[in-house]
Amino acid sequence: MQKAHIRLFLVTLLLFVSVNAALAQFEPPPTIVTFAADLDTITVSDAEAGQTSATLAWNTVGVTENYRILLEAYQLDGWVSLLNAGDAELPGVGTRVINVQHPLNFGPPTYRLLIVDEGSSVLEQRILTIPYADTDTPATIEAFTSPDQSIDPEALTSGDARLAVAWEVSNRPATASITFEQVLADGTAVVVELPRQNLWIPSTGQGSVAPVEPGTGRVVRLRLRVVDLVSGAVYAEEQLAVPFTGSPAPTEEDSTAVDSAAPISEATPEVIIPTVEAVGVDTSGADTTTPQATQESIG
Image (cartoon, rainbow, N blue to C red):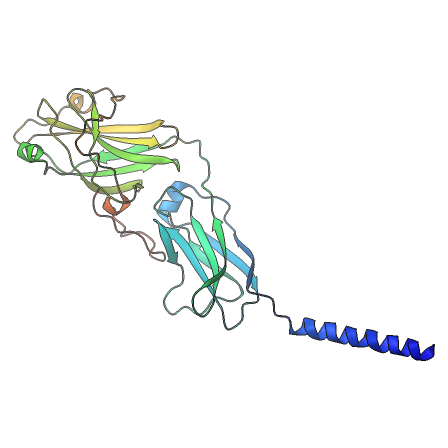
C-alpha cells in the first residue's frame, strides 16, 4: 500500500512539473487588448481646425521582435500612417498624443491600431472613432463672396465661364453638405460645381464654380446652401450676384430677388457635384502633423 501511495505521488508530481513547464513555454499570440482615446467627442468645427489634441492609448500582448505595431488615421477614402519618418517602433503598451484632424469625409475622426508580421500581413487590428458632438447652435453662413467684379457673357455661351468664390460656414452639422448653385431667370437652380471624386467640401475655403447662361438678364446669381444629406433640411443659404462685363453693378435686389426655395433644375446639361480635391482652401495655418488633401478648385 505504501508503495502505491509513493507511486501515485510521483505521478502527480511529474504531471505538475510537466504542466508548469508547458505554461512557461507558452507565448500568447499577438493580441490587442485595449485601444482607446481620452477625448469623448469633438465638434465638426474643432475637427476642421485641427488644433484639438487627444491621447491614444493601447495595450497589447504577444508582440515580440517578429511583429510591429502600426497606428493610422482614416483620411478621404484611405488609411494614412500617424508615424513620422524615423519614428522608433511603437511599444506593446504605449500612448501617442495627436491633433485630431477632420477626415475630409462625412464620417467622424477614425483611427486604427494594427499588429503586422515581418511580411506586413495584418494579424490583428482595432478601430477607434471619436464621435461628433451634438450642437444646438444653428449653422450660419458667415461669408459668401467673389473677387470677380464681372463675368464674360461669351464665356457663358461657350461653357468656359468660371467664377472664383470664397465662403465660411460655422456650426455645421456632421451630415450637412455645402452646395453651390446658380439661380436662373425663371427661378429654377442648377448646380455649378466642377467634377470631383469626393463629396465633402470644407466649411471654409475658396475655389471656382462653372456658371451657365442665366436665360434672361445680364446678371449671374449664385447661391450657397448648407443642406442636410439625410433629412434634406436647408440649414442656411446666401446669394451673390455678378454682372456681365460692361453691365452696371448688381443691386441688393439682384442678389435676393429669387425665391430661396427655388428647386434645382433636372434639365441642367451637366450636373457637377463639389469635391474635396477640387475645393481651393488655404491650409497655410493648418496643422501638418497629419497629411491633408490639397484642394484647388470646386471641382
